[in-house]
Amino acid sequence: MGVHERTQSGITVIDVDGEFYGDNATDDLEAAIQRDLADGSLQLILNLSECAMMNSDSLRVMIKAKKAYEARGGRITICGARRKIKHLLQVVGLYDWFDRYDDEVEAVQSFSGRRAG
Image (cartoon, rainbow, N blue to C red; front, side):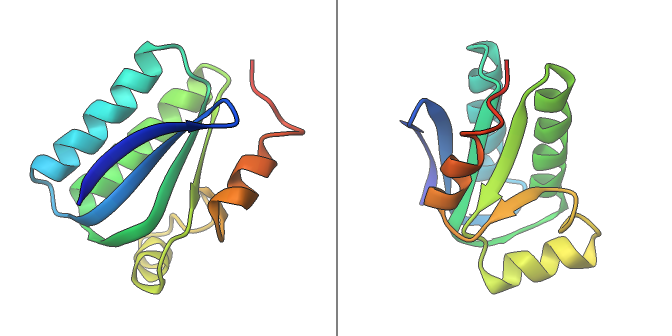
């Protein structure tokens, strides 16, 4: 469980694993995103395939991240969201706001024709 950072085809991927209810896990997610931004990254995939649930604090982190990447000409996508996460994003009006893909392969491929920077 937790947050795991890695690179796939030159794109930062953050695996979000478990439940994110505004506690240490959410803090870890925000810290990982901030590290990636500090490194100058313009491309981020949040892999939510192992994320069981999140609350408004975690959604705030994702919203803040999307705005930060876009402000510097970058892009953030999400992939692998389970049914509960998809439903949550729909309820709060964020489902269509995020670029989203069924799996990581599609998310990585989405950057190929639209490389930022």
